[in-house]
Length: 503
Image (cartoon, rainbow, N blue to C red; front, side):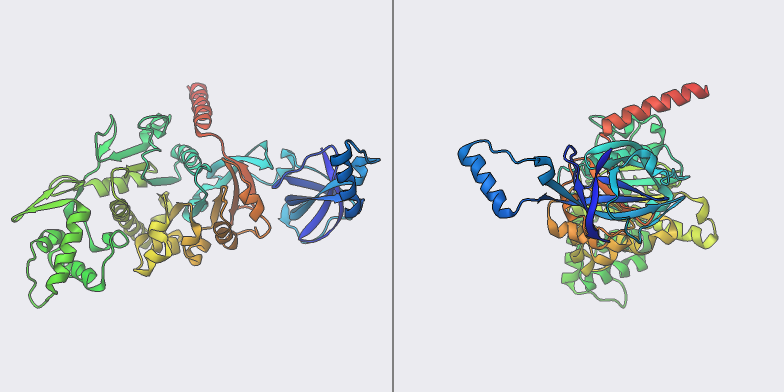
């Protein structure tokens, strides 16, 4: 479909006159066929154009407003719209970054799925949605190399109501049936398992979904209990604010008493040769009792929450084993405070990180699946203010996790709260709609592709529309994310048909 013709511009701003009977939208993909090459371009701005001077246009407008209808001869020729395009790729037998201008006055047409032949399905596919051109959705699925994408971290920034949860539900559903990745999901809204609606409990391979909850686990789920003896001082980093003396207190008691360090710290057992200020001990005790939901009755410790003296000895090791088996492990943290949720994630992540470091030393890491940790409201553990108080395991993974096949999926409304060096390490960004310019700017500055002209396009994204920028794609791909309930229905039908065919 012919959309227009090149009339002027430069390399970063090709100006196209839009055909009178056509409509063009921000973000729309266009194609120019020039000799033996194809150019793929994208619309990033629109404006009006006219052969009539501004003064005469104002006069005509006045005549229309005050005197009634006033027609201009050849209106479609004299008045028109202009679209500003940025070149993205040059296509011959393969795709390559565009480094030259198409010929002057060439025709511009709408993109078709046949023009995207260079986007192939990788060996470890991660489905995100369909290619989108403006508001038009093409019958062309977008797959990224899941193994690489997940180990090199993913950022999902968006304003409220733009479809973050829907996107994450689709991603989890797709990955659950794959064997290349294990997913650890800290779910503060208890929405992904589908306890009261559609969710991963309805997946055809629901045996690969493990659900932990602290209250009334449904059939097939597990009660979340962690034994106090499994806690280590580093698990508290990022979950609770500690001064240097308080942090040293934790480490000294752990070094001295190992698995029983919390009990002896709460009992204020003296350590020979080591003296802490009584206020330091008192503050540490108060923070531990509050965070771990404990009660002291004489020398007895009563556990009221998920931490226990007896139960939960194997919970952490079992979760790590499930992740190693490429399963999706969902932790219902909707009953917890933010600090407790962070601590639970820190405990599991620290153990998994240590385990994968051990596998790397043994030369066994290549055989293991990628582990991806889903973090809602990521600035709680990766924010600038949090990291000023000291590094935590999530910060360590953001910086070096890719070496050990462990990655993060960071979901946030405020990407500007995350330090630039961590944003730069998020090698795949799935940008949903963001109204705030400061948040768009933070993501644009750290994106693998040049999005400097796409601020308006990102601001105009509707619910479910996204822009995928990644080191594993040749261009920033505009996509439409399917509605989760529709996606799950289609996938279940496909799975049933495949199963019927195989039998």
